Length: 323
Image 1: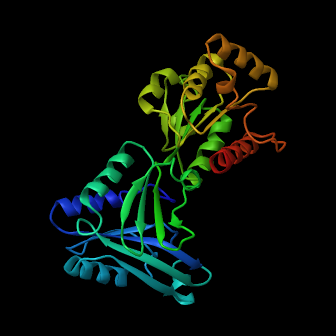
Image 2: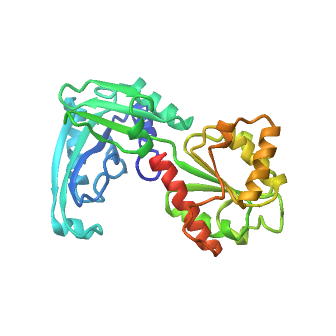
Image 3: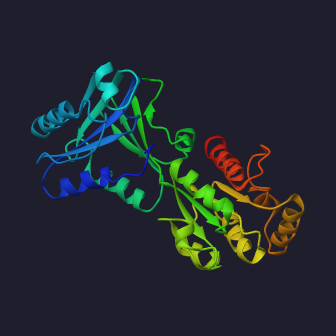
């Protein structure tokens, strides 16, 4: 999904398997200042339970009524709603807009096995796309190789043919930060605001303190003790900040060997040259080493820890959206 990771498909599958009946409502198109982005979902059970949102409260009532009807009659529906200026203002928007919402009962329209595969892929942190033809209601699942631009941009939407809707289910973004230093203290909240789940790793107890990173996941261990179970993947960024090869190098080696979308390392050009030599001695190729962003961050003249964190977050975003 395009916003924070949710459990809406999981809940819909659970309701369906429990015999309650379940409907998934999905925003497929928007115009103007729509309250919720394309791909947003609402699950509705036959008992009237709901999970999620398609409009921030503007049209949920009407969607729920339609959902209850399709549970009785079967079939999918494509609904169009205009959101007035007053309704939009009530949910924090400056002006109104128009949204189209796809309403699909689980089982009768979305096959249970198809929804179960989506749920399984999400649990395994594997990206998957759900494709539905809005004219004949044919459905299929796709992987990132079928629509790489959509997966990379995390962008659900209707294709140019105006009949094919693609819902992208990417794993949540994560950021591994090695070295609980001052830059990390600024970077962690920035990463969380940008939609990442941060993990801070530092074996040095003086740095890996809860009061320095309130409410965050901090591991007082070496990266090679943490990362094998954590699992670096294509939705993970890695930033090394400790400036100590004993701490940084295990994380760098794990990241270089993985398909994480970003690896940035603190240190001067001279420091990086030494790092490259160590990696080559360990058997890593020039092609693998070339994926490292070093010195870390975009060159915007950063001086303070907060400014460096801004440059790092900008470079991570660039790698995610343009890489």
